Length: 261
Image (tube, rainbow, N blue to C red; front, top):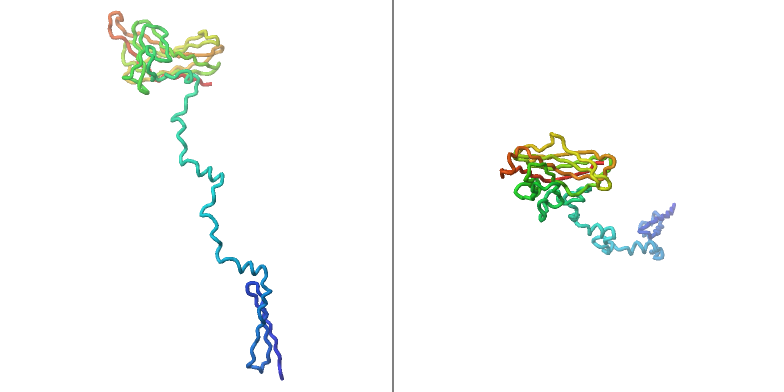
């Protein structure tokens, strides 16, 4: 009996279909299979696209992406911010804006120093650099009379009714012949003096070789529009001013006045 066998195998390689057919008898041992020729028409657009793709992508990308507007803004930012900020924030209280010589640092005007007034005339008020609390200078007040004397700030600080005003001054009172205490003048809107306030008896300077801070705080009353601070000088144990004996001396420094609403 003679048997016939037909085999068909489909092979797909990279999108190309090959038809392989073999026909023979089981007793034709020496027969050979035949392979149909390649059908070149089977190369499709897809095959071509795949075949012509280079092994590696061309090196067309830059080493780094170009700077955009944002990149440029970041790139050009300095490593550190410029040192445009002051070391300390300015004191914006009205008094600090109205005066500049709170620490008696300004040279030039003397007896009294710039930004200050002598309410009375029987004493001297000189800027000195040999004794000071802050900075490099202070004001030396020297009695020339046994009568009370007033050393005043020139600036009248605007104030609001109901607020509190604080005057602070550093003082060095290293003798027993005189002393001082803080005080304030209050004025109405027309500039007329309407009130004078003093520190209490416990707020006089003490005889001491160290600097001491004097503080006076008062509340602004109705009708008061501005305030000026001053220090009153008192003769304490000056035995005889007319005889030329050593006069009382008081050093002051770092004068401040602030308002709290």
